[in-house]
Image (cartoon, rainbow, N blue to C red):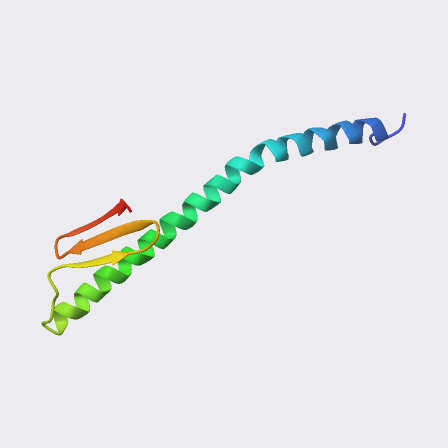
Length: 86
């Protein structure tokens, strides 16, 4: 009795691995993209709050400012941070 796998068994296993990998790749790409967006959003919010803290320390606070880009408009109030599509 021989130990190991035949070439056909290895090719079948490799085929299954490739098919599963190809079916998972699009959802993995969407997950990576959404995590990047969430990370960037959290960084922006963190910077806004850091700026607010610095403004409070310096006793200088602007009551309203608007940040615009091609894809969204962000309106920042002292008590509210809100993003909406442009």
